[in-house]
Length: 203
Image (tube, rainbow, N blue to C red; front, top):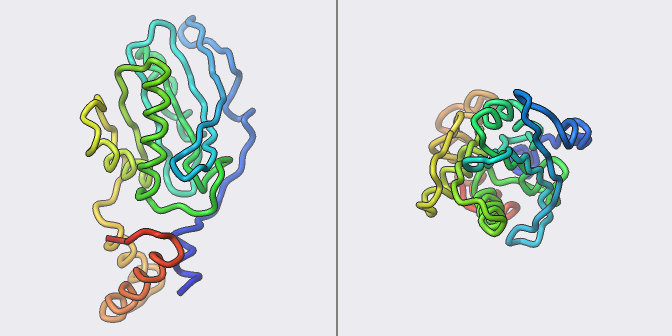
């Protein structure tokens, strides 16, 4: 059961070089943009590695939240669209992912706290209009956080899931090929194991 729980809590971690984020100063449509790399600490004291792409005369900021087994390089796929719209982009590695500190992920539960810390930093930095753009795990974290912060202007939720418990049931049924009756039995044990190892409830 530990090994199955660790599939959820410790997905494949992709390391990368900050050189893959591109140059720190660059042009888009003949406008000059800057990237600042930094780190902030989350509420659990873990260091989150971040990048802040700034547009001249920006109209707001998009916080990009990556998916499971992902990292802040994912934000490059939306960077041009956002910068051409005069929006700053802030991307980061969730704790337990990429170059950030931490060993485990929770598919949204603790990640929403990471989003909260990022938003607090951006508010302190002077950003007034903020939106969240998340994919998969990041979409769930964005939705969970935005449900408690009415000041978030928008959320782009790419491929979120509605229930982590149902997602785990589906994975067990389809990929481990357990019969439905056994899945219900194992989910109960799996839920206890995730609470023990990960510190959160699937529900």
